[in-house]
Length: 316
Picture 1 (cartoon, rainbow, N blue to C red):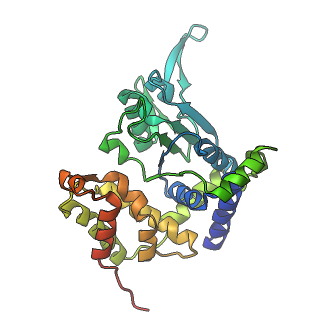
Picture 2 (picture 1 turned 120 degrees about the horizontal axis):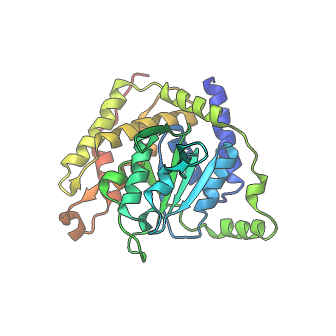
Picture 3 (picture 1 turned 90 degrees about the vertical axis):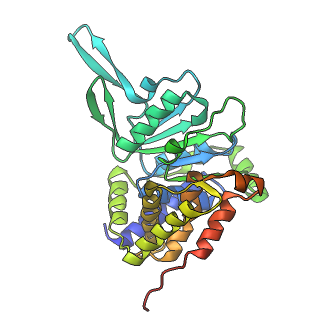
């Protein structure tokens, strides 16, 4: 697929999802950028703002198989990974796939389930396969997890460990719609489901092809150094207890490539890095007590680091 065709397809996908998700264009773009970068998405939001509709809209526009799991305390790891069962007719054990055997998995309210089930899902996200009773089963490609969690402090929630948060490429929040968008949603919902009007504008082969185009976007050595300096600055900041891991720096590099493609280029510039900088880095940082005492937020610290790390310059 040529870059021009890729850009047209990416914009078609965005326009299609916008039919069902009103007034959240930036969120749609950010999620698609993560998908194109082979990343997983964490949505932290209150219930009822359209997270499920968003996932369904992407699955339909991209013609992806879709599963949804409501993560309650009684959900078991085998519900996600699958299990083997003895078939008395054949005299052998058969693998029964879990919810993860799909292209797009919506893991709803992931912070309401047990740590063991969370770990099973996060391991699958990293490995791209499941192992049950010593037998490994490859997950379908592409495989995308869109997980939601309620804000920490909600009844029945438990915070995800840092090592698990690091597996998500981005963490974003949809938030409430503005007045104009909410009015439009009410009008649409009173007559029909907006999802009924979404057309399939791509398929799994197209998405895999787009992901390969993103992989081949050029990154100059100065950009690699720039991203490494941003990550290094978080590890040295006096108000940060835990800085950005190498995995986090790689995630920013990958999604910067996808941003470049969206903006019609086959190479990355510093603005591409900054476009998703907060969404990739913010959930990976742990602030120390000094930051909390002074009411300094993650956003403020990331802004400070961005202003201090010099943008690379290129000859025109």
